[in-house]
Length: 185
Image (cartoon, one colour):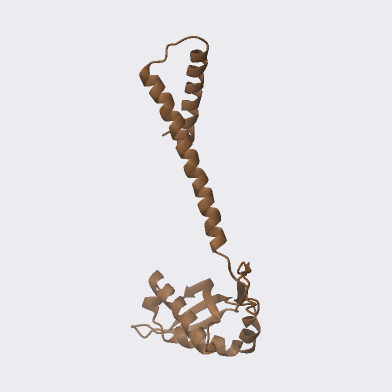
């Protein structure tokens, strides 16, 4: 299968040889050949336009991904924007017992990276780290192994942890949770 660029290059090469012979005095261009040359030229221009628009759209999307700066004292009159810098806090490995329908003992082991909304919340997090671990363990105790064994269950658990931790802090501190390791025994 030929790619767009190969087809375009073949058209350009063929068109160049035809135009050279045309300019050289040989008038052997038929109507289908002229149509093919025009089609190749038009498709090259249209393809170039869409490639250019794609690059412009990508630059526009990257410009829109900028969030306001954390310092809101100058936000009243200025439009200054700074890119968001993710602040991560890594927790050591946490173990919790999870329930199952057959009443067997199962253990959930996980290592978490917490993404915070602001770097200033890091000190608050470090002061209340024991309570954070307790909230994570309590949330894990309420889960069952059948749910945590599925991908949708893990995603639900992740969103539930974010919600529980933000409830624990009484404000939005945790943006997202990333599992460095997650295993069930």
